[in-house]
Amino acid sequence: MNSFVRKEANRFYWIVKGQLIPESWSDKDVEGIYNSYMKRIWGNHEAIVHEAGFEAAWKARESMHKDLPNRKGK
Image 1 (tube, one colour):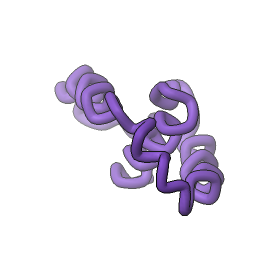
Image 2: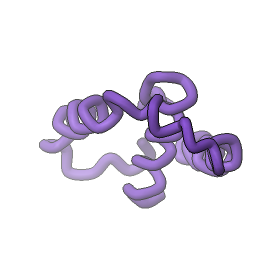
Image 3: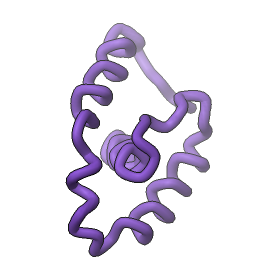
Image 4: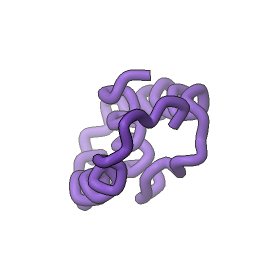
């Protein structure tokens, strides 16, 4: 899975659930969130309101993993 899909799936999950996807979830599960939540929030012009805090949470998660050589399977 590429980093764009992983980040977007997390953004969609944040908009709907208010938190990031648990890191223990498989790539297949994350891709499922990406596909299903895209349909769920498509055209919802109010979704952006619920995006507040996502970038900070995403940067915090990514900074925890910056020293790891490869997060394959995560």
